[in-house]
Length: 347
Image (cartoon, rainbow, N blue to C red; front, side):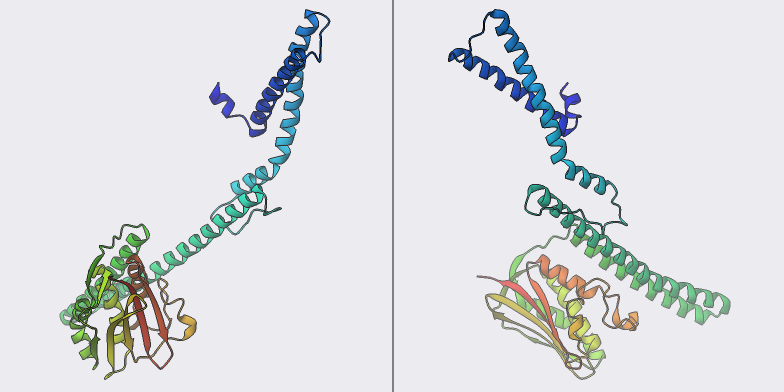
């Protein structure tokens, strides 16, 4: 019975409850009138007639009125439900009408529109992300196929060895891209755990500098580490190394020969600040807000050998924020770039 009743519409259920309340109030009113002497029935038949008719009639009339009132009040919600049923991935730009933003129905519609806006942004980002991934994966696959077809036609053993080497290089690039995408996917799904601990910042900076020392020297540059021995911060060593490796590699890639890359840290405003500074080509101000987006590249014409896939800075932002920190950039064309990481200081 209860399940059958719950399947009825809201106006019907509301009318039923209102009718019961009205009948009860009518019977209580008759009883009060009898008790207070305000009404004295001529005989028992009149009394039973009043008790048996007045209550149900009052309940029926109030129930019918309650049904029409509820139907009228719920009309905007029916309109919202009808429009919501017509929504799909291609029509997320539609919005529910908000007649009165101050009442409960207006607040409901406003909240639903906010959800639609978030969904629309998420779907657009997903489409853009899918297109970018397809484009980035298509490039090495096309290169592998092209060099393979040329090598098959040539039948030269030396050429075959070179072809295999080129194919392995493209496969390595694809593997690196997939690893980075998996890292970002783990971060999005909250599976990337930051194992936070208090540690010396200088040890991580020296490790990163030593690791990339030869890479910088190959381009005629050098990595200079400036950090006091006592600086303590709260961080995940693996994630911090990952972020700094990406930033220093970018600095090496875009710095002219003979220019130093500075990796320094200091205490400021109750935080530990780590900076990666180069004297490279720099970044125009209009790109500062977007360079941390996935697959965003300042120079679209730059080859992937030079500019990568555009995931490095997205990973930097993700891992730094996962450690409870923040990253920002300060750069001008022709005057180099400065990437600044802020971490929580111990004590």
